[in-house]
Length: 190
Image (cartoon, rainbow, N blue to C red; front, side):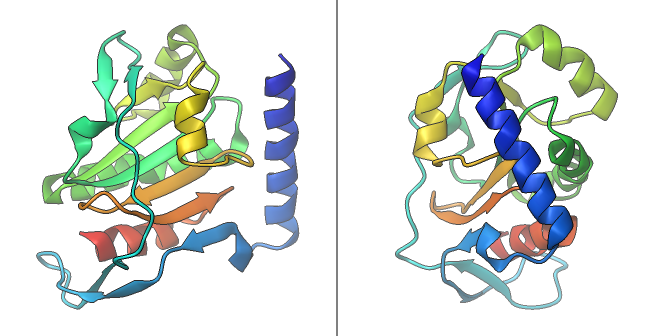
């Protein structure tokens, strides 16, 4: 219970910081990016992670809301948006519809959203997933501090990690991030 309160306090603090100062360059930690080829229909150059970007860990297995095992390595070779969130998190509720749209728009280009609910049960998640029409895997992160540690430390939620096709962590966003920023980064990695 103490961990939930700590996460709640951090989420409220992050929301207050966002409201007080929308543009916070320190909230995004991007690896150096370089020019590369574009995706089909992009009409311009794209960006990729620098060669020295930190490698992502894929050696985790978690249950999805249906109780099936999902291994993060199943998504290797795709551009992955890994979103750590919770149903009680206000900024998470704002970001998720954009992730649904991105999955629909870019999924055929090798893009995959993966949601990791940090402290909700499958019973809590199912109505939420249905209501928001979440069209991507939602994994149960409750009890998987090892996953959070591998992609963190998570100082609050939402925390969203963008992983390139070659398994490098290209960007980490702590707190609310606008849809345009995510779309630019996704298109750049595709």
